[in-house]
Amino acid sequence: MILAVLEARCGVRLSGHDVYLNVAGGLRIIEPAADLAVAAALVSSLSGAALPGDAVYFGEVSLTGAVRAGSFKTVMAPFEVSGRGLTGASNQIY
Image (cartoon, rainbow, N blue to C red):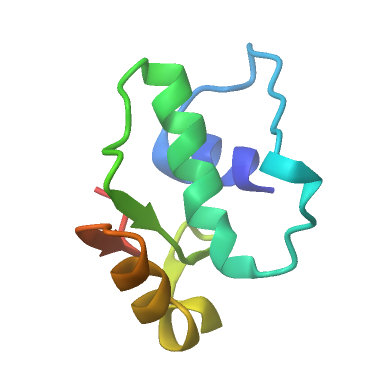
């Protein structure tokens, strides 16, 4: 679904590419707030521009391309960001 939204709403052309996504450790993602992190990783890979290593991305990507804050932002983000020395968190696409 994220690939389709990136194509239709963001103009990111991925249809000519084979896309594989690997989640470290084989974790199962059940939190919709992981959508933005996946989208950011896909765009980063396609463009060849690395994402900042000290940032975290979270947010649910809707079918219209809108980014909604997920439960991760309200419950876990403050602990995750401060406990790992990360300098910023984003739930926005720029």
